[in-house]
Image (cartoon, rainbow, N blue to C red):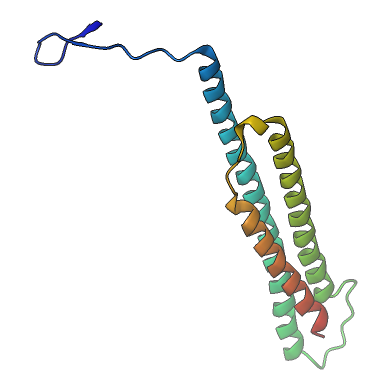
Length: 150
């Protein structure tokens, strides 16, 4: 037993904690590394969600802004190389496409981690993937609204 000296100066004896084995230390480090990797993957997916949301909302805003401008200047016959509606559709489609690709990549990397580290299963459920799916659905809804509205 190791003597431990409390602040009062008296010496007490407490049993020493057993040292973890090297396998236990390696397992704990692997768990922590997996946790950091999963957090990094979530942050990356959420960055893609943020970028896609910006593209979708900017495209929808461009469409609504120029739709209002066109209503104000209905008597002018101006031709554009690409209409504001076309720009809006491109931006919304780009946002949806990037979000779909990012989500597929996220799921692929998560599957690879699950196959390699099956011993450390189950992994926690990610809110980032749920948010990505919701934003993708909202983006598709915005795209359909712009397509159907003439």
